[in-house]
Image 1 (tube, rainbow, N blue to C red):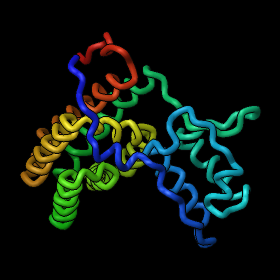
Image 2: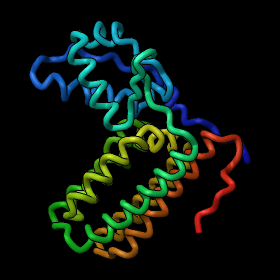
Image 3: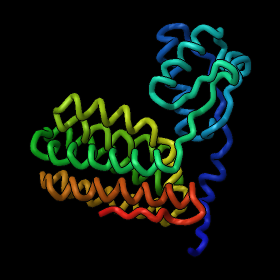
Image 4: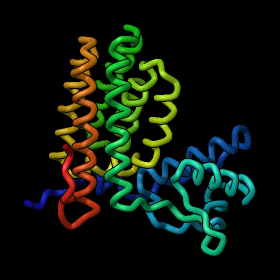
Length: 242
């Protein structure tokens, strides 16, 4: 396979952002949100041990709210807590990566089909605005900004399906894939492919073509999976999707 160049914009933005001192109001949710973002953006990469003292100093909090936040993230499958080693960012096995992407692709396809039948014109307009903002981020080489809008689009399609069990299952499972989904766009060619797939998604959604949107969403996730598997293995997996 021919080597692809890493997008220089990502390299420029690779430094870990400084965390602001956190306000006491809604402290738990704020700490969880900050740590989750650090994991998604790979500031805290898979397998990294989290130093409680350093995190407390950086965020200006005590160990009690930090440990509560770590427990919440452990429940989401993002953090692994060991009695002997403390907390570390959970590292998925290759098998877990493969199977989780496969499962989430089915959830997104089902959500897309239902969304086309149940979405409101106002929601479509919101998704269109996010799509346009996402394209601007691509033009500026802003991968974190791109991904936050990208994920908001997927979340809103899931919400528009009007099925709370489907939506919450999707959110819970997708949290484990977020950092990998972001990384799958490191190579410019992959990023542009994702943009084209999102353009097709918008066409299907605006036409309320549920079958087409379901097929595009499923393919989109499986493409992400294949890109990720190229990053986590030396060779493409031998398993094939039937």
